[in-house]
Length: 190
Image 1: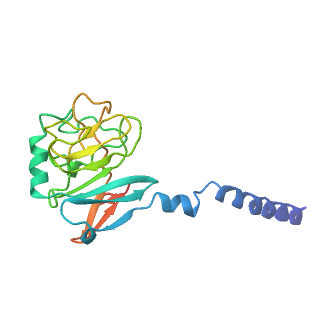
Image 2: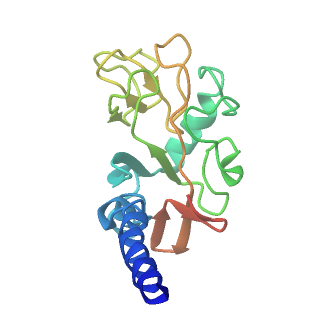
Image 3: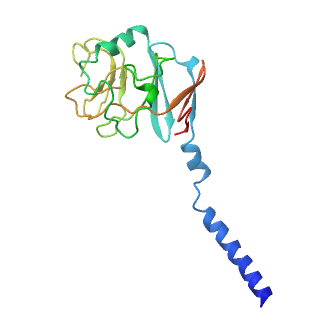
C-alpha cells in the first residue's frame, strides 16, 4: 500500500508539472515584451526611425534645434501641453517636461507610433509651413492619415482633432551615448 501510494504520488506530480508549466508565456511571447535596443548613430538630426516593441511601432526622432523651438512654439496650439491625461500608459516621470524627453537628451523623442483616436499609424511631417492636409502655420510633427489628427514634434495632439490624447511615451533609457533601450529604464522592465 505504501509503495502504491508513493508511485501514485510520483505519477500525480509528473502529470501536474507539465500542466503548471503550460501557464508560463512562450519564448515568443517573452521576446515580444522584451526591451528593444536602438543604435542612435543611425538616426541623423531631423530624421526618425521606427522600431517594433510589443508588436507596435515606436518612433525615435532625433530633433534639431529648430524642431525643439517648434515644440515650445506649439504649446498654445496643443490640447494637453503637459501630458496630464495619459492614453494607455503613464508618462514616465523623467519625461514630464516640455520636450517629453529625458533632460540629458532633449533632442531624442521616443513615442508610440499609434494614434490615440483609432490606432492608425501617423506619418512624419517634419517640414514646417503650408502642406496638403495641414494648416498654413504647421510647425512640423505627425499627421494621422485615417482621420486627420495631428501631433507636434513632442507627440502632443493639436486642439480640435479627433484624437483625444497625446501619443504615449514608453519607458526608455540611454545605455550609452550611442545606444537607447525601449521598454526598460532604471526602474526595470516595462
